[in-house]
Image (cartoon, rainbow, N blue to C red; front, side, top):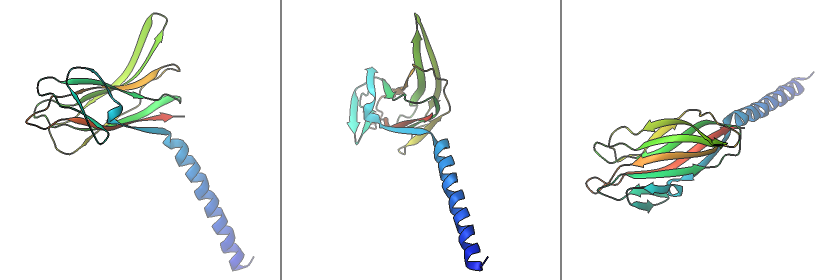
Length: 165
C-alpha cells in the first residue's frame, strides 16, 4: 500500500470512530426539555409577576407556592435542573422534582428536594438527581418562592428534566 492510501484508510477509520462516538454520546445524553419559569402555575400564596419568561413573587407579605409541569415521554428521569434567583435574606427558594401517579385508590409520589443557598443577585442552579418513575406518572417541580424583601423579588428563571430513553 502506498503512503497516501494508508493515510486515507486511517482517516476513514478515525472518521468512523468519531461518528460512532457521537452516536454513543447523544444516546447517553437522553431527552432534555427546557421550560421557562413562566410556565409555573401559582397554587396559593404570594402574587405572581412575570419578567422575560421568569416567574417571581411580588408579594411582600406571603410566600408563593407554584407547580411547574414537565412532559413525560420517555422511560425515566435521569436528572432535573432549576435555575432560580433568591433575593430574600433569610428564606430560600425550595423545590422538589416529583414523579406522581395513581393506582386505583392509592397515590404514589417519588421526589428529590433542593434549596437555594442564601440571598444573591445572581442566579443559582439547583441540580436534582434521578427520580423513580412509573409508566403513567406525570412530572412536575413544586416550589416555594419567598416573599419580596426590600424591593427585591425572588424568582424561577428556567427548569428542565432529562429523561433516559
